[in-house]
Image (tube, rainbow, N blue to C red):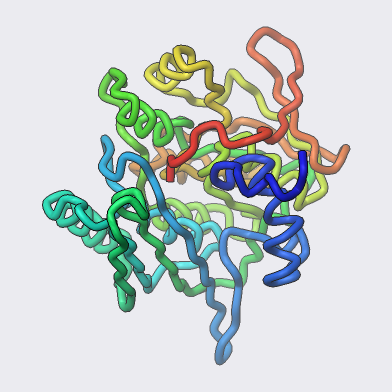
Length: 336
C-alpha cells in the first residue's frame, strides 16, 4: 500500500494508526522513543510530579446506552491520567458543533459531561467552542485535555512489565464497543450498557494493595485487550501469555460479536484496566479490585514471560495456542 493512502484508514486502534504514529506523527512532532509513549506525559514542576494528556472523541451515535460523548470525553481523559498513577484534577474541553445539531441533545450531553466530571472529582477549568456549517462535521466532536498529580514515588510505565508478572483484567471486555455498535446498527443488545467509568478509584486501591509491585497499567480502549497487550509486550520487550478461558466476557458481547463476525479481544472498553503485578502479589491485587464496585469481575488472565520481545499468545479454550497480532485496520470505527 502506498504510504500516501494510509490517511484513509479509520481511527487509531489498529496497525494503520500505529503506522501513522511511528512513521509521521511522533518523529515529526515529538521524537519520543517507543518506550516513552504512554497514556499520558509525566512532567515535573517545582518538585511536583504531574501527568498531562489529551484526546479527541468522535463517537457515533453521540448518545448511547450507558453514556454519551460527553461522559466518555471525561472518562477517557481521566483514565489516561490514572493509568500513569496520577490523581486527575483538571480538564479542558473543546467543542466542535455542527450547525443544526439538536439543542436538546446537546444540553443532555453537556449535563452528562458535568456529571461525569463531578463523579471523577475533576474540574473543567477552560475550553473552547466552535460551530461549523451543516455537513462539515458529524453533529459533535469533543477534545479534552487533563492534568493530574502523582502523590507517590511508584514507577508505573508501559515499559515496566517484567517476567513473572501476573496480568489482571478488571472486568468483562468489549462492553463499550458492542453497546455503541448495537445502538448504531439498531440491534437488540439484551440490555448491555457501555462500561464507561472513571478508573482512578480502582487504581488508588490497587496501588495501596501492592505498592511497588504494580509495574504497569493500561486501559484497553481502541483496539481492545489484544492491542493493549501487544503494546505493552513491545514496550517492555517481553512475551505475554493469556488464557482465553480466564477472560471475562458477557453473554451479550459474545453473542453480538458472533452475529457481526467480530473478536471480543479487539473490541473497545472504556471502564476497564489491565494491571501487571509482581508475582506473589496477585492475590492482594485481585482482592482489592474485586472489593471495588468497578472491579467485581476482575480476573487474572495471564503471565509475563522472558521470550520473544513483543510476542502475545493465547491458550485457547480448545487447547491450542493462538498468536495475537494487531489488526490491519480498526475493527469498529467511531467507537470513542
